[in-house]
Length: 286
Image 1 (tube, rainbow, N blue to C red):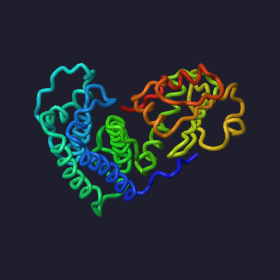
Image 2 (image 1 turned 180 degrees about the horizontal axis):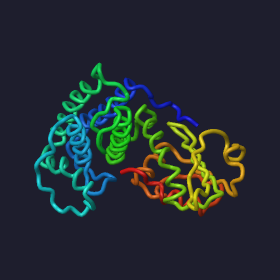
Image 3 (image 1 turned 120 degrees about the vertical axis):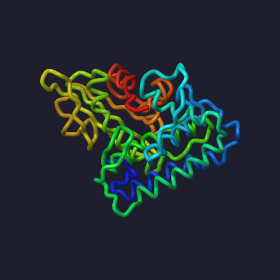
């Protein structure tokens, strides 16, 4: 079932949504007290200022700025090469004030918008993305997942929930949905013959369905998109249907690895063991 409100599908709408979610972080930063920037977030080792520094650094790099030439200490929260890469921009700005980081984000947003609103750019134009060159619409969607998730990190840290019904939130829900078949069939190890339905109850509302089938001797998650779990034709033949209901915030926090299952409210109907395994394996992005 498509999410509501629907995510933008055209390039102009995606660029608008990207600008809005970056602007939301800027606006939060402008309204913070100095000590708010030092608050810890759900990102291990990162304060609010560090999270915003990460957003600034990655957008500046995608905009054409060179990576900063800094030495990154062996912080405990850095576990791999990706972690070391993302820490470069954070370390470079570690001595800055929060206000200075927000000022830079505003400048970087103006640069990125000038690039992304360019008349010659189309949805299929290949541009630099976080994982290498990719079509512009894919890059924008991936960046919105990361930026919206970090906006929520900031909001949780300073106690100002919001922006759970924006275009960027809808884009994030749609992208996270794409990872659920693998989560259910592979990461959670749900056996063939089971169907898992995830109801995202709002403010962005949608239904995610996955039926597990055996394919060449291995479990495969087949996405389902419409209908009630108990009557959907695609669920016929399933030995068991397990239904999970949770808010937009809860789904986003679980899928981003920011919360454990016992830290969010989830309503379960069906097989408790299947539900526990899916919830424990739900993290698909950081």
